[in-house]
Length: 82
Ligand SMILES: [Zn+2]
Ligand SMILES: [Zn+2]
Image (cartoon, rainbow, N blue to C red; front, side, top):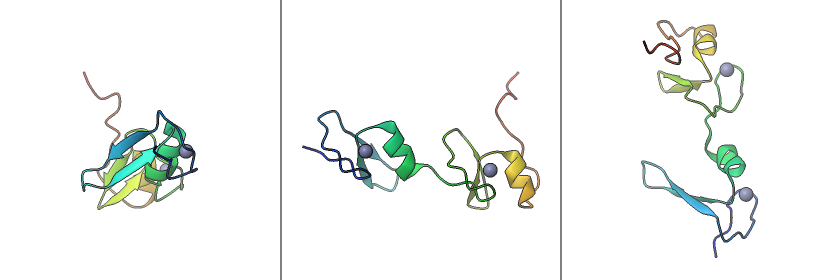
């Protein structure tokens, strides 16, 4: 059996997330996965569940927060498709 590494729930439908550096994480639900895996916005500290933006190795929930932290030239990609 596999136990969720966040809440310890022993759940037969638990799933594994494998990151690109080869680490494996086991979760029983997406909210636990988000709790463990989602990056934190460097500006407003919200957990980033959507795409977010990355600048200089830092994650932000959106271009607005990136700009607030002095990152220039960041624009939201969402909605920019023709
Ligand atoms: Zn869990
Ligand atoms: Zn933010």
